[in-house]
Picture 1 (cartoon, helix red, strand yellow):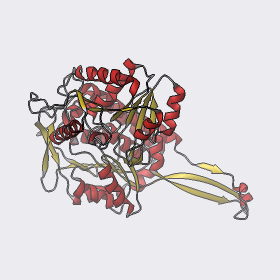
Picture 2: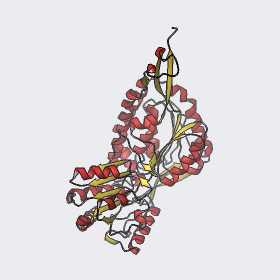
Picture 3: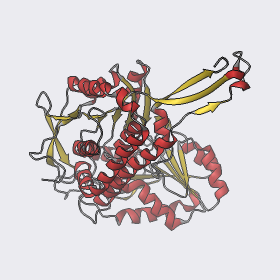
Picture 4: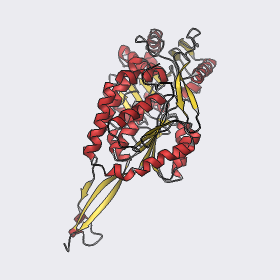
Amino acid sequence: MIAGIPAGGKGSLFIGGEWRPPNGGKYRSVVDPSTGQSIGEAPIASADEARAAVDAAAAVEESWGANPGYLRARILRTAAERLRADRETMALLIAHEVGKPIRDARVEATRAAGVFDLAAEEIRHLGGESHPADAYEYPAGNEHRFLFSVRDPIGVVVAIGPFNFPLNLLCHKVAPALAAGNPVVAKPTSAAPFTALRLAEHLAAAGLPAGVLNVVVGPGGAVGDTLVEHPRTRLVTFTGSTEVGKGIAEKAGRHAKRVILEMGGMDPFVVLDDAPLASTVEAAARGVFSYSGQVCTASKRFLVADGIADQFAAALAERANGLRVGPADDEKTDVGPLIDGAAVDRMESLVTDARNRSAKVLAGGERPTDRSGGTYYPPTVLDVVPEEARVLREEPFGPLAPIIRFSNIEDAVRIANSTPYGLQAAVYTRDIAKGFGLAKRIRAGGVHINDPTNLRWDALPFGGIKESGLGREGLRYAMEEMTEVKLISVNYRDT
């Protein structure tokens, strides 16, 4: 039995501070992508249980919001300490549930603990501001008024997490919501329920009152829609596909609910002809092949200047061929499995389409035949990919590096901005003036000069534009999204 999975291999729902088996007795097998073998069974909640979770959160909405900030911070810091002490178990759960290489899973577990510390610190800075009433002519009498704004908790927050960062990205939703004084109903990915349920254990043990965090696992139709449309939920924070995110926005909009959406991307990695080749190729490999490319900020389109394209393509292919593909729990693994067989099928389809449109396969490009049931696909480099190829129009979410060549800056800008997405981008050049110029013109939520697209600072603003997202994460920014601004006026003329 893998550490962190309950005895008997079956998980429970966490509602109102109690661990409950699903009412209907339904479970779903959780499969290790490295082996294709079941490691346990996830509970499948019903719509009634989703409603019960919201009711439990709503019942403590006022009391949790009224808790002094220093007490909320104390609980969050205690949770961070517990997560650090439990890092290895959390990392192994991540590795076995979603196939993330163990070295990367440890990084995720460490970052998740830090997110709770950052959220605790930001409580001190989540305030309002005073306003000079006498600067305004209307309404009359402002010389005798004092004006200030405060931030109130928004209410019950629904946190819907993805499979690729099942701990850290769920923490990016739960921690700021709790810090801002909001109770939470979390719906983690069905692929990694045990990671989320263990997080709930740590928060409960840290002193979080019953009902402030609830965890229900189940399908988006029955459970997710119920949470989004429940009259007592006020904000939905979601990370996942653009298609699902747009559906959530539509449902939430019908009830005037706020959303924070972190969705898909087609992140361009632009290489100018003066870029330092060795460091650029190394960064490109990290940007596209880390966690098998299953990252919304992964480098998904390599826009390379004609003058350096042949060298770059050959060097990236060599680097791809040198990466070790293997099971997630192997310390030597560089690239682990994809999340499931459907993802492997998608890689094959995208590569076949690119080949049929005259793209050249320089590395990978074939499904391995000797991986004992795991869902693997090798790091793949495609060169001279035409713009109409699907791999340049649809988010691959896999270890595919398509290279498209450009002849001038205008062409690079046009290609970079040619998709409906705008999450992150990278520009590699020795000419910082050119780098700044491109950063200004590329339409994205973040542009990194001489760093890969998948860079993220947990405390700083993160999010996309266009169909890549709405709102911003990053602790302070998420907390601002999760609070309501209230203006208070005091007329002291007759006091």
